[in-house]
Length: 385
Figure 1 (tube, helix red, strand yellow):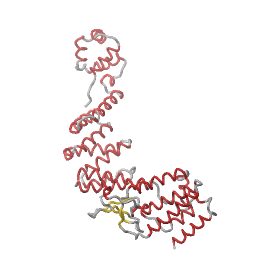
Figure 2 (tube, one colour):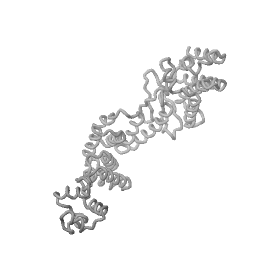
Figure 3 (cartoon, one colour):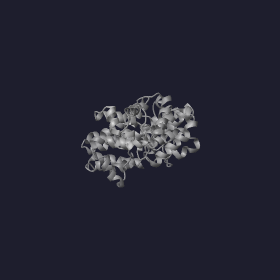
Figure 4 (cartoon, helix red, strand yellow):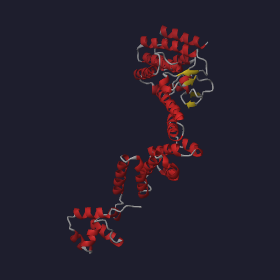
C-alpha cells in the first residue's frame, strides 16, 4: 500500500510560492479550512489532484509522493533505518516497506536478511522468503542482490530444496559454496559440523591464495598464459616469496608441513625461474637447487597418504590426502568427515615437473648454455628415472 505524502508536498510547494493558506485556497477555489486540513494530514478530493498538481507545476505522482526521486529517497531512508534497527524489529520494518514497494529488489534483499537472521520466523515466513528470492533470481540483474538471495535460501530452505539453491549461480568459487554451507550448518545443524566446516574453510582460504592460478605452466600450449601471468619476473618472485611465507607461517615446528612440501617445492622452482628471468642468476640457480631437494622429499611421500597441514590449533588436526591419479583431494578430519577441495594441483607435483619447467619456461631461454643450467637439467632428467 502506497503511503501518500500529499500534506508534506502541499506545504512545501505553498511555501516555495510564498503563499498563505488563504491565498492558496482562493487560487484553488476551496476554503482556507480545506487547505489547513490537507497540510495537517487530510486528503483532497481525488478530482482535485490534477488541479492542485497543475497549479504547482508538478505531476500527480510528485503530488502524492510517488515520483522516482521521492521513492528513492524513501527507500534510502528505510535502508539507513534498517541498518540501525534491532534485529527483532527489522523483520516488521522490512515487511512494512515490502508492502509499500513490492517491486524494490533492495527492499526484498533487506527482507530476506531480516527473515534469515530471525530463526524463529523461518516456518512462518519461508513462503514469503522463497517468493522474493525466486523473484530476484528471475528479474533482478544486480549480482550482489542475486548472491544474497542464494545465500538466504542456502541457509533457510528445507533439505529437499537445498541442492536446487546450492548450485543456482554460476558466478561463485568453490570456497564461497563452502562458506554458504558453513552458514547453513550454523543456523540449521550441529555446532560440531559448523566448526569442522569453518576450519575447512580456513584451510580452503589459504589454498585459494596459494593456488589462485593453476600452479603449473609446463607445457608448450601454456606458454601464452605463462607470458601473460608471469610477464614481470621481479613481481613474480615477490609473489612466490609471499606465498612461501604463508606456508612457513602455518608450521607448528618451523618445518614445512608435509602436505605443503610439493606446493612449497613448486614455489621455489617458480621463484628460481623468475630470478633467472630477472637476470639474478646466482640467486636463481640456488633456488632451483633448493627446489630439487624439496621435490625429492615430496616424491618420497606415497600417493594417497593423509598428510599433516600444519598447526593443529588452526585446522583442528585436519589432514590432506596426497593427490593420486584419481585427481580427488579431500580435507580429512578425525571423525571421518571429508570436505572436497578444488585445489588438487597443490598436492600433485610430479617427478617430471622440473624437467618440463626447464624445457618450456621462457625464463630459461637466456641461460640454456650456462654450465649450471646444463648440470641441473641433467639432474632433472635423472629425477624422472
